[in-house]
Image (cartoon, rainbow, N blue to C red; front, side, top):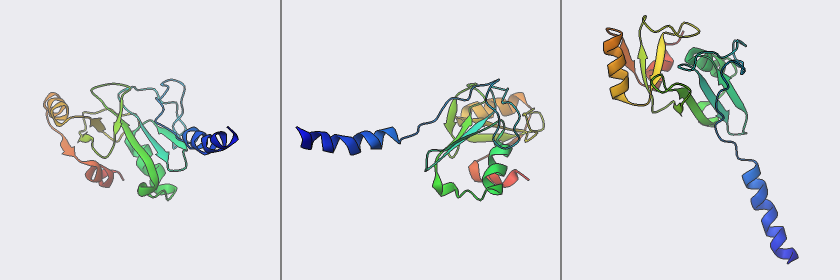
Length: 145
């Protein structure tokens, strides 16, 4: 009986250390970069390090600037997430998202970038905004000053 219990402890510790994405609490959570309260449910981002530390942001440019200014290697991130503009409050994989950059997009910190889970949703919004540029993750990242 004692032997079985000893095998159980490492398994329990393994599961206790796992960190999953955490929903952004709009109106309460503060951006880890600019320290402003995250308010707009159509924008936002989150990263989780391989050590389990969660960082939340009000706009993709805050996320990118935070990563760059703190020398965080993206390969050391367990999760890179952004809010799906067409599904407010919904976090999606940042690497697979479709980004639209347009002056018509009024994002919290002026990046003028919105993220979408599908190419169709991104194209529909581009029609509504009468233009813009569709970007992948690396193009979006490069477009942030």
